Each structure stands twice: as structure tokens, then as C-alpha cells.
Image (cartoon, rainbow, N blue to C red; front, top):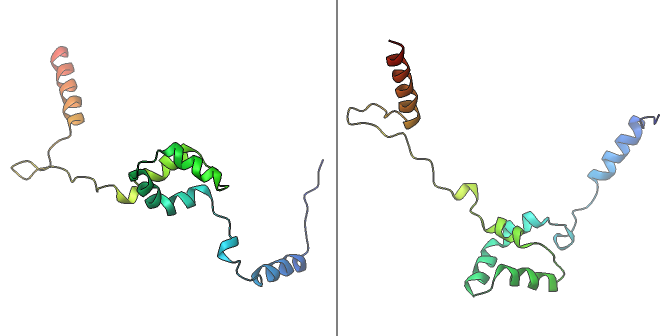
Length: 120
């Protein structure tokens, strides 16, 4: 049975100190996930599509530059974000100012009335 590894507090403190003292990595050397990159270049991809290129051609072009991702990644990037969706419509009010009942409520009430009429 394997034994869980443990280290001294001094080893952990030394690690924390050494991590905190690391310099900022140059931006050009920082890794970027496909998802994050797609969020950043979605406008560019949209502009290239407007020039007449297909998503497959965009993916192929990227592959030629050493960056591989799928058509699905591009589609996901171009899909409207949650922030850009319009807000939900408020509940409609009737002429009297009461909130209009939802269609689901009407169906449930109608079913109850039918059941009541049958049992009478």
C-alpha cells in the first residue's frame, strides 16, 4: 500500500518563497488555451469569414501556422456569449395590472377543473 508523501513545513515555506520570487514571464512565452484564444480573436475570425473564407479554410490556415484547433472550436468562439444575449422579458401584465398567468398554470387549472367535474 502506497504511503502518502509529506514534507516539512520548512520545505513548503521554501517552495512558497521561491514561487513568490519568480519573475513575470514574458507575455510572448505565456501559454494560451484554445478557448481563451478564440475569445480574443473572434472578431478577427468574423472579419475573415466576411472576406469569403470558410471555417474549414480558417482552420487549415491556422494549421499551416502551427496552431491546430477544430472547426468546432471556431464555431464555439463565434457563438454569442451569455453577456451579449438580450435580457429576459418581464412578466406581462393584464389591463387590470395583474400579472398574466402563465400558459402552464392555465393547463394545470383546466386539468383540475376537468377532474373535479368528472368526480361530481
